[in-house]
Length: 512
Picture (cartoon, rainbow, N blue to C red):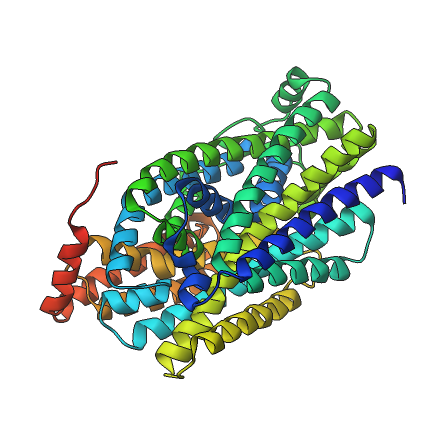
């Protein structure tokens, strides 16, 4: 193994060791399921902001987004990023304080628990919400494991499956040990590592391409590459139109935030509601800058390829562009090799920050919402913690199985899971927080229709192409919202006690 490879490996191992140490330290603070799943509502504003966005961005930020920009230009990536930036801000502005106040008032510690207590429903909403979380979080977690496997396989030439399993073991270890506080604290560290990685890669790739002027000139020479209304087709070397329907389809990514359990849980966990204003500002700025830099890295990466420094990447291999640039950096000396290790740790950070949050949300759905609440299994606090940790392990094993194919696309898997949560939970969450007349029947119809519509549209309608080629989140979200409203109006009004709780939760709203 070369000196550069040793330096890279050392940097990555130091990072991974730090994650496990954090998990071990926080394991001592978990005395109840409230601590394990929500950290006792003790998060500060900076940790809340950065852990929410680090868990949100995932490996998609450092692999999926640059890969799309590398292959097709800025159009597809930019409209997706714009939708996500808008969704981030709207979610923090309209939802964060309301769900923090409401969840504390009714003592809800998970998203299914919130829906159940909000509508005074004992089993129906709890059960369906928990099942939806498990269904969509398993492939989401699998995408993270796949990103880890791709990272080590492409960099060190090691076996993809072995690399993925080792990374999964580390993620499971600190998540199962430390719970929510460990996941949130490591997410904060991971967001910092991700930021360092983005900054380092963008400047080094610009340098290797011959300067940023050369990067822009190369992009300008490719038809449609820098357009917001066309994409670049690598095979034909021509511009392809990007229609208004497709633009709205990509902007619809922003709707997903209203239903993301691992993001909404951060809102619920902050120590004081008023501090969410600070968190919103930090989160919004970081998201906008980080996505813009990630897209530009894809543009720079193609210029580096044209300069002959790296080979042309096609298909899902384009998602390893940052890995290739880091490998190139490592050949510039020992200090650069350490920097390359930090960059690669940043990809791990992006992956792990999402995977740990998803594992926690999924495990809480099984151990808390299904075993205890739905099936009425009476577990002590200790037994419940054990069940939660075993669930983390079981879900990880399934995710590893699903991610066994190294050719799977990180962007594609994340896209599907994101749509699932956005459609199944987004309309329900908005109605639960903003409409007193909504009831449990409308919530149930909304969840069920949103989740089913994702599969129907993706596998039956969207393949028809043309005007039907719309990201499944948008039509599924609209159908779920319409059914929530219609079914709520066609069935009885909520009990007076539910309306009283709603009115109490809406009082004392602070200005943003």
